[in-house]
Image (cartoon, rainbow, N blue to C red; front, side):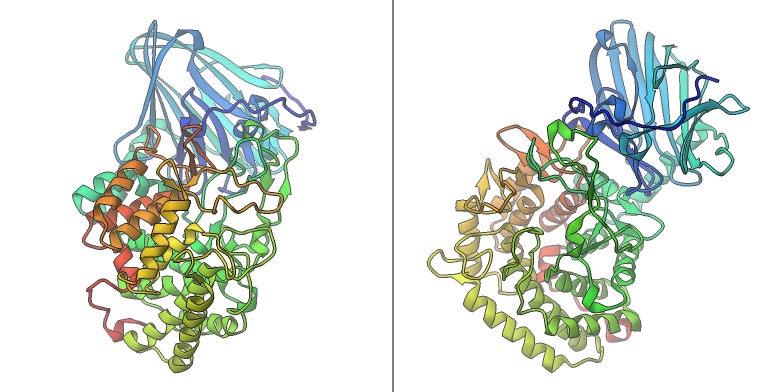
Length: 626
């Protein structure tokens, strides 16, 4: 036995976060949870057994005392660090060159049979002295586990309902509240560590063969990406984003998390810190099209089916986001023992925005059903009944103010983007009747659609600035207006669209990228000194492509691709002045944007044309609709 300590609660607040830059992390995962691995060989974030479970490594938002797992050479001996994913997989290789030789640390999580995280250290040259520091803290870094040995010699850590078992041939010892060890790896040698999760009231998880798990995991990821039908030039660019998106799909349900992290800040040292480990309806259509156009119809159907199940029930109670399995209660609280990433507090768990009214979600959901039909995903009778119920609810809502796509915590407003997405909801329902032969009151829907169109054109467009505006009566802009061309609300040659793009170029750009909020907007109690919102920059490239400005679209895409970190990952935002990524990481919406923009410029299936109705592709025959 190494040590036995009763489960404790850490009340002392760590002095500061010790995490690296956001872009210094890489993600590994098993399509049910994910971990972030730093360039220094430290796993600083892991939530088990689900993306939204309590973290057992939380150094990302605190200090090593809040949980991390370091495997690396002695720091003074490191000459350089290089890392890459192994082919088309989520297996991470980090190479440390030292004065004594070179070692490779391989990190991966096998796709689920059990629940494991595996680390292997392989000597490539010389003989390198390694160190490991294993600090397990359940409850977001607060709870110290009871640590003991199992009959087969494995390390077992238990706190409340959670159990972790660590198996390795390395001699480990307890020092204070940590488990440490030193070992040497010579050329051709491999040392393995297998960490497994289980419930504390059950027997310990069985041992697995790490080499077999590695081979199986590599084969599974390679086979998955090999199913893509993306054209070769596009596939080369989007492969890592597709793998990242797949890794953020919660496999048991098909729900897609916005990111595997919480509270990585939009503004360093301030309060714009949100929990993104949930599934947003606003991402529905763009995500569906990214998957379908790349040939991943199983994942697209699972996402569309998740949407249908999640919003089923009372249409008046539709939410903007749900949990991984469609859970509705996402209560927000703060982990105030954590100092936050680089002092960015509070650290939020849960998301109170789930209770907001955002009218755009009606259009997103119904458009996703329509685009699914166009792509060959049948809509069953329940799904069509749900569409009609949503429209019945929207009849009484579309003329009301809401909180908008960016989840403002200020007073509700008549956001232009929200109104246009209400138009989308009725427009797509009319198209489903006319094109696919579904039965519904299409004439009434058409009248409402046209009324919304007149309302937006009269109240959402400012002739003085020749642009649509963020909300009715305002002279401010909003990056969500970049989506107007893609909705089909106006034809691509309409001068109001060109005027809006010009206004955004003039007022909403920073360092060649798009801000989501007008610099003139100061939202009550929330500073807006955030970075450029990467998804919005991809939307501008999409708008360029749809409006015929292909050179500008290609230039912006190249600029965006250059922001990816060394393993091809993007966060939510980018700060030009800091030269750093900001926000939760990796961000599904950023990678969806990358996939769709590349398709718009390099693929025969162009989502901007598909969504706006400008594509010449034949609609599916009526008998395939239901």
